[in-house]
Image 1: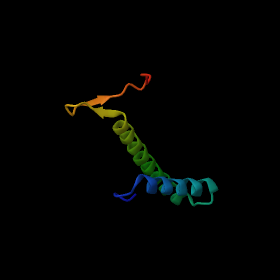
Image 2: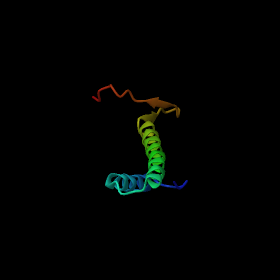
Image 3: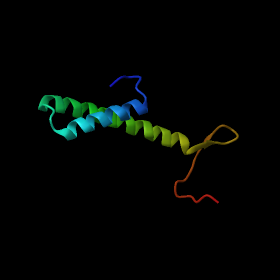
Image 4: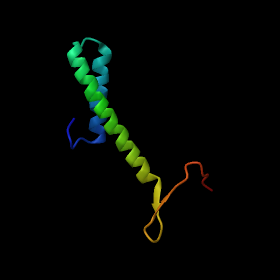
Length: 76
């Protein structure tokens, strides 16, 4: 996995790995390597999504302090 990979690039690589493994014609050693790479990509994507969610569910007060939205709170 490249260090400067974008979320979209990671998802595309993960999709390719899944398709390759689903075909079942990959030698065992290569399948294990692809699986490990897929796990790294999956974690990267999940971490990126968690960070994006955290960023989007915050707002700033006039004093610049973050306020967390309550996910269960109804919008009026």
